[in-house]
Image 1 (spheres, helix red, strand yellow):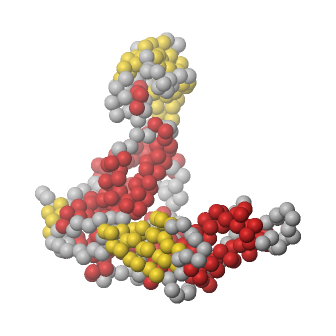
Image 2 (cartoon, rainbow, N blue to C red; image 1 turned 90 degrees about the vertical axis):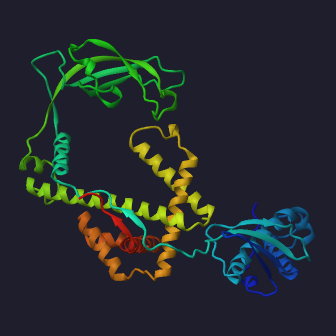
Image 3 (cartoon, helix red, strand yellow; image 1 turned 180 degrees about the vertical axis):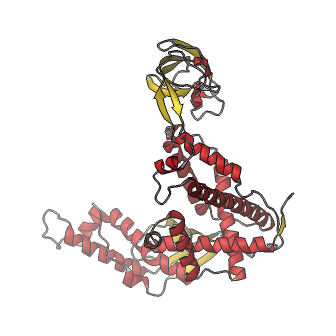
Length: 444
């Protein structure tokens, strides 16, 4: 059973608590906290009083068991719980006294609690390093990326047409021709022990065209008649997501069941109406929207590349440590997003193989980038005001075609609002650094 220890809020504010601070590294501090014997004795007495009112002990009425009996039965448990509560009741005050802002939960090393004796514990705390940014003006940047042109718009229109294509039966023949869509059953043989067998795949659509069946192409079906079975050699790529299939040579047994012809809609206003997008009814409007989206994507890609260049140069000129807790947190987030994408692609996340060292290096680069940019923002007095936040939310509402109230609701909670302000502040800092940089725009 758990022992209920009274709150120590009244004790937390008392004096005679000794706090010693050691700087073990630019990002690690050690606090040694010593609580006086009176505080220990009062906490123990309160714990035993509370315990005596709740436990049932044979031979004693509730609340009447003497403390020595309670100690015989519950001493170790009470001392552990009181130790924990003494730490909880004093650590925040000790951190405040030494003006320490921890970036993660401190690691506590506790001494044994003894009645009538001072109680000591040590807390290892990670903190943000003090960064004095330097050499951040006059960076050398290379402008990359270009605005989306007409060819990109037409390519996207072609992709949309293909996405709207229907598969119609081929009534006039039974032999597959290149360009057909074949409906097949298939399975693999010759796979290693323990590898997914991929057996029983039924009514799968593949294109009769050059390429691998692993990507949905099977040119070997050309000339095959409905009902016929063929064996096709398959080479699994060396970077296949399933480790046991990497580089494997196998055989795919394929049975042709039916043929379909891809019917791609004409590029006109009727096709646009089939998209069923609000406010979009004409081909010219679709072209304009695609151009806008591609331009936004191109700008986002250019901004990402610009940030990567800026951060890489800043970290080369400014060397510092980053708290391991922040790096761990960032790496875990990256891994979680990778796993989510794998699940969305229909793969088994258990087969995920990640280079942990590379992932951690990427996480460290990201965290250090955020830290150096924040330090520059502090140095330059870069801030984000409410009008800028409002303008951003209005843009979100326009781009996503949602009511402004809905966009604002997304950032109504304090953590989301703080994250948004930090994002906008970083963007302003990057814009400042880009304006101060020497930019090579390449060949016209």
